[in-house]
Image (cartoon, rainbow, N blue to C red; front, side, top):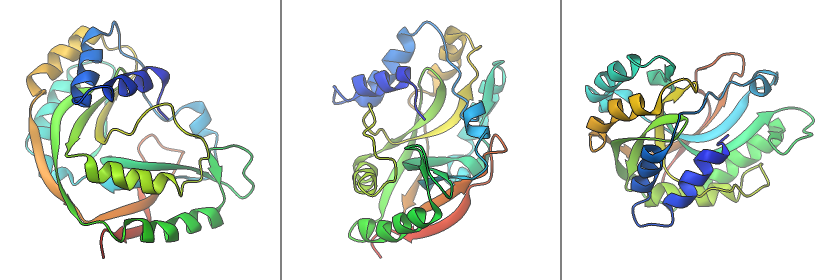
Length: 236
């Protein structure tokens, strides 16, 4: 879930040809960081797993910059780093898997299977795409790596959104990125800006997007293994 502050930053970003620059400008002008941790009481209260459609980001292609950046962030109290296995680009959130949905962010196992099957056709005509990961940027609640170019990912998101189980239109445009850490709300914004500024233009690595993946997440742990439900080749 993305909070109102992040939604506003992304929405403002898309009013300009340089959306990531606008997000960074918003962070520079912000007065404080916010708690961006996803494992809220609401998240933990669900017995069923959470499903999403993602692109995995291989941590090894981001080295050695990723570990050096993590070292800088570890010096800030109130930052929670994402482990290697959790690095991903979100394409489409799907919802909590339950037998009898009662909320917009819930879906049945059968509906998840329908989505996975329909996603095959959604990306079949698309070609694998090479992307660069970086520079470093930040929302009010999370540190992330930009993904360039974003055209292919935005096209994937648009096709998958039409298939998604969550029936509402979000208030923010899609901005492809890989989150590497969340703030807990206690980090002084000035300290975070000082730590990130030297990395602003750093390209950490490149890789080819040849497949997307439907995964499920155990809601009982903060950073669960992304369990593979379906691997879908791009342009097979």
